[in-house]
Each structure stands twice: as structure tokens, then as C-alpha cells.
Image: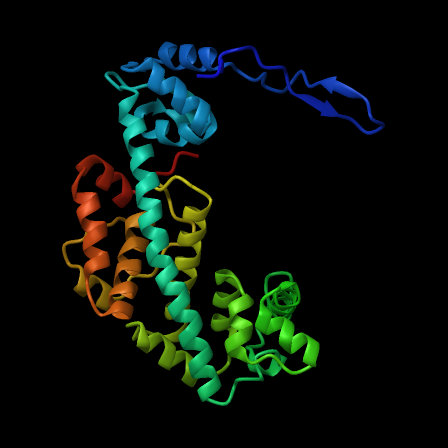
Length: 317
């Protein structure tokens, strides 16, 4: 194994004019030996130093620190000492399980994204909107807090993604000068752009048909918020974010149909589990079976402490 305990240099800050200075107010970088000593000084019981050392080298102390918080006395108040009896495995296990769960979630969100993308394009085209999706009149006249029209930002984003696309079919339309139909255009958009396109679209008939096809029988706004929450959940997993005890900034709304479909599934307010419930429900309606939901439930059933962390959001700030 590489010598990862060697001294690391202090951070330097480049000042205007090109000179560099040691920032006296900046924290010096710690070696892995120093990190382990700090954790031990704070009361952590180290059961496998080699494994902890490797985790710090591969996973980053800062990333792992999110898993420490529920095991510390008062992190919000600056007391980072560990509670009595806390061991390294207490946070290394949920860290490892998060990695597995993220991959399971990405499999489900991919199913939701691809189905929403295809069904929206099909329904919109069927309802006469195959070539009107770039028209401002196709979207609601809604402004953000700065007074900017959301549809203008959306149209710019859509144009950017189509211009950047190197797909064969898009290059064909570009060379021929022909308008790009919606079923081709949506394939160039990332999930968040697609979600904004759907939430701002003015064709209520198409939206109702789309949402109904994935089991969302509530109002259009709530349905769009469910899809937006799936984008947020997907992005968290794509960027390897912590799921255990995460407080979701964009939680999924809970519909009566979701709760009825999974009456025994436990979730707390703003927890990852609440968005997992929505994801399981959507995939079940898309696939017409509960195999995916059972995969998630069986994974969580394997470790009660981990499942409790997925079902409970903690706020440390």
C-alpha cells in the first residue's frame, strides 16, 4: 500500500498580482496518522486501524465526517467528541451500504427518467405538439424571484443541449435544416431539463395523461414535484452523496396511492426513505410488478440500524 501517512504541505492562496502566501487562518492539511489520532482523541474506538486508514485514503475524511455526526455528542455546538462506545465500524458500515443503495436507486431512477422522457414526447406529439416545444407559448408565464421568466431560461437550456448534441439523428436534422421533432429533441436533454420542460408545459391534457400513466392521480403541481424529487434523488446518487440520515432538500410529496401501495414502509419527514417510497411506487407502475420495490425492501431489512438512518433525517447545522 502507498505511504499515505507522509506529511502534506500547507495550503497556499494565490493573491492578486501572482504572489502566494500561507493563509494563517486556513487549516493545515492533516496526514492520515493525524486524522486517526484526532478521532481516537475524540473517543472513537478503533477496531481495525488498517481498514480505517484505507477508508480515509480512499473516501476522504470530509466525506466520511457526514457519517460521524449522529455518533458525536453535539456536532452542531462544536463538540465533536464521540459518544461512549462508538467504534469505527459504526459509521464504516452505513458508508459501505450507501454505496450499494445508490446503485440500486440509480437503476430505478433510470427507469423513471427513460419512461417519462419517452411517454412525454409520444403524448405531446400525439396531441399536436411535435414541433411546438420550442415556442414560448407552449409554456406557462411564470417568473422566478428575480423576475426572470422561467420559460426563457428553459428554452435557452434546451437550445444549448440540442446545439451541443453529437447524436447522429440530431446532426442529420442540423445539416438538413429541418425542425427537430420532440421525440428526438428530448433525447438530448438531461433529466433536470426534461423535468423543468414538463413542469412548465402548458398542455394540461398531455401532462394528465403522462402522470396518470405512471400512477400519479393527483394535481399537476404535486405530480411535477414528485418527478422533480426523482431528479434530485438521482443527482445525489450520481455524485456519490451520503444517503444515511440525509435531510432531503427536495423531498418527494407523499400521495395517498403511494402510502396505500406500501403500507409497511417506514419513512420520516424529509428522509431519503420518503423519496424511496415514491421511487418504488413509480417503478412499480411503470413495470407493472413489485420486483424493484422488493429489492429495496430486502436490502433495508438486512440491517435495522441502517434502515433507521435512511428513514430518519437529521439536521446538524
